[in-house]
Length: 71
Image (cartoon, rainbow, N blue to C red; front, side, top):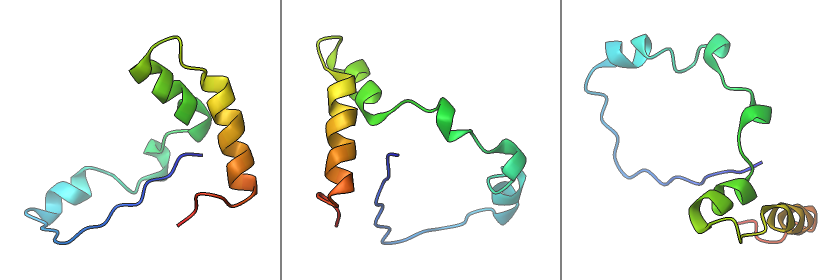
């Protein structure tokens, strides 16, 4: 899994109706995580075919298993 840490200083809801209309919290509209690219696949798309996506994903899984790189 790939995660993001987002620090928000200020947030404005200009139109609360737009937020409701977006159906952001509708589970029927959620994307299946299995259909999402891995972090390695994203890096390969950005850096080119020479990037070893499988090795990156494997090494990342090992780091996460050791809890290395967690904030």
